[in-house]
Image (cartoon, rainbow over all chains, first blue to last red; front, side):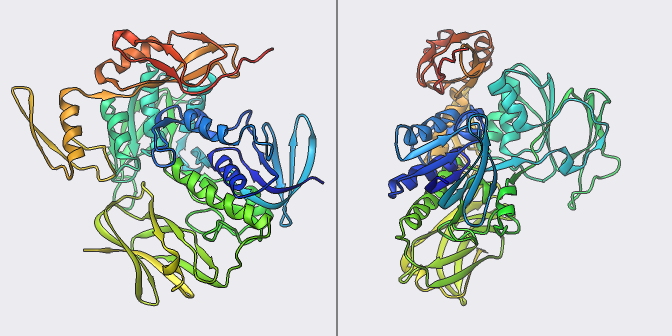
Length: 419
Length: 118
């Protein structure tokens, strides 16, 4: 069985950044396995710009960002990439079984494995909307792939449910292709997308946004003919008497993303609540020794730049472990989100003697202004940072220097304090 | 208007005198003031869309405007590009349509697209 230093499952921005980082940190034999026909992952269908400002210090399109990541690993004898190859299982002892048309079924072994499978969209089944099963209901990402890569339009008259970034971006994209976007409906009282997308994707095209509204029913038997929309109360329950109909032939759903962890769970990787991804430490190691995870498979990011940053962490430590040069951890610290912070990655720290620099990635539970982010241990504030604004849609990061992590014991909390 | 320069998303109010920019309130920083002025006097946007491509791995090639375009012309440019077809191979950065609609901005390829033999 062929033995690799690092095997990476998934050739999107996470997998490619992890591969490059593993290479730079001395790994000599790296394998990237991708199920699609080419590398780059979902970025290849995200043709809009706005990527890369943090990571490459330059504004790029999705395919542009993917191209940069691919160029970093190309022509390096240490890195091998297999496309059109589906991983069927990953075992606790880091054996990876996959299948492709050329080699058939095969198994390879890694000294370390990095999980970078990304996430997938929630579908109509997840939101249980009433109605028949007509053609014309798509997830926003599926429609994006049709329009941007395959050359088909899913319909002409569109309603979008969910105001996350993918929904907003698709509202603009369908408009530019000559479709009429009738409305975007959002069940929350605030948009879940970035402000720049609200302005450039909705306001620019005079597309109405219905906040605190949801779709009660999809009308039509063979093809979507319209949707019934209603206002919702504070408990997100429809308010009787507020129903109205919108005519459309297509409904796009942008109702959330789910980290894709079937392989992780089958391997025995522990999944954390709320993030629905592997519970990882600051090196992105899961509960299984030698198995690391990074990017959207761990928690859904809003910027690919942070996916790359996180994957570089996993790539580095996986490479060091494969070479036997990982500094052993002597101190285990649990990380608990409190007061207004809903999720925090990593969920646990395994710190070596003298500590180690740690970056926390957090998401707030609700929008707020002028708050202080505090990291506390045993009632003492170790690090704090003023935040002029927090939104659930925009991830918050905090760097903790090694010296501060050396003061930690047992458990830390991260939370928001209002002025 | 909403500022889009950073996550703050300040609500700004712009004052116009005889149709000309006269001042802004509600912004928290100079970048907001600059955005507000451009947005009321000469709003511009990037355009990303696709053109058809023959002989490539995919039937579509993603393209991007090399610079921002006048906001009012974005839809016209997108409509124009719907009828453009190119031949593979193409390299990221290749000019697909020079000086689109005489606006002085090139439309360039967002990615490489190899020629596929079949």
